[in-house]
Image (cartoon, rainbow, N blue to C red):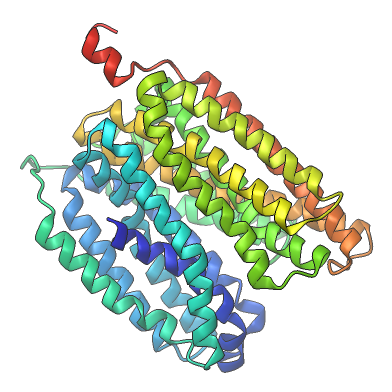
Length: 457
C-alpha cells in the first residue's frame, strides 16, 4: 500500500520544479498550469465511480487497473511532443491516480483492525512526508540535467513493483452475484463534476467569474448534477447512494474531509511564496519549512490511534480541530514579523492537527459500515477532500489576488505579500474553525474497548 501510495504522492510534487525545463523544451508557457489542473480534475471526478466499483467487483481489480492506467499515462507523458499532448497524457495519469489513493485506504480498512489502523495510516502519511522532500528534489535533479522526461519514466519500476506486490500478496473474497452497474449515474456525475470543478479552477484565471464561458460551464454542470440526483433516486445500485450524505456520522466526516482539503491547499500554495518574498529564503528552504507539516501529520496520526481507542473518535477529532485553529491562526499572526523558523514550527503544529483530525474521522466512518459499503464511504471522503482542494484553491486564490491588486498588483513586494498571506491564512483559519464545528457535531461512537465491555453501547 505504501508503494502504491508513493506513486501518487511523488507524482503530485515531482513536476513542479521541472516546469521551467519542460516549457523550454515544449513551449506553451501560458498552458502549463493545466498540467496540475487536469491531473486534479481527472483524479477527483473518477473517485466516486472507482469507489462504487470496488464494493461490487472487489478492490484488487480496481487498484491494478489504476496502477496500469497510471503506468500508461506516465509512459505517454515521457514521450509527449508538445504541451497539449503532455496535458492530455497527464489526464490519463489522473484517471489512474483516481483509483489508487482511495482504494489503498479502503484496503487498509479491510486488512487491519481498529487498533492497528491509525498506526498503518501513519505509515501511509509518512509516504507523503517523504514525497514532499524527495519529489521536488528529484524533479530538480532531472531538470538540472535537462532530462525532465525522466520524472515520468521513473514511475515505470515503481508501478511494476506495486502491481506485482498487490497481485501476489493481496487476497480478498468477493461475493459472486450479478450487479447492475449504474452507468447513467456514473456518466452524469463525472460530466457534472468535470464542468463544475473546471469552472472553479478557471474562474478568475482563464475567464472572469461573471463571463459567458463561466456561466455556461456552471449552468451546464448544475443541470447535469440535477439529472444525476434524479437518476440516483431510481437506480438499483446507485454510484453514490444517498445514505452517504444522510447519516450524521458520514455527513460530518465528509465535511471534515472537505475542510481538510480546503485548508491544506491554502497552506501548500502560499507558505513557500510568502517565505521566499518576505524573508528572502531560497525556494528549497521555504519548501522544507512547509515540509514540517508533513512530518507533524504522520507523527500525530500514530499517536491518534492510542487517543481514539481510549477517549473516542469524536474527542480526538475535536482535539485535532482545535490544534488546527490555533496553529493556522498563529500562522496568520506570524505574517506581522515573518520568520522561517517560526513558520516551520507552526507548520509542524498544523500537521499534528491534521493528523489528529483526519485519521479518527476516516476510521470512524469506515468502522460504521460493512465491507460492501466501505469503498463508497472511503471514496466519498476522498472526493470531498478533492472538492475542498478545488474550491479552496479558487476562493483563497481570489482573496490573495484581491489584496495584491488593491496594493498595486506587485506580489514581489514584501509588504504586499505579507498582507495577501495574512488574508489567505485567516481564510484558512476560518475553514479550520468550520472543521472544528463539524468535529463537535459528530455523533458519539463507542470505542472498541467500550463495545467489548458492553455490546449495547
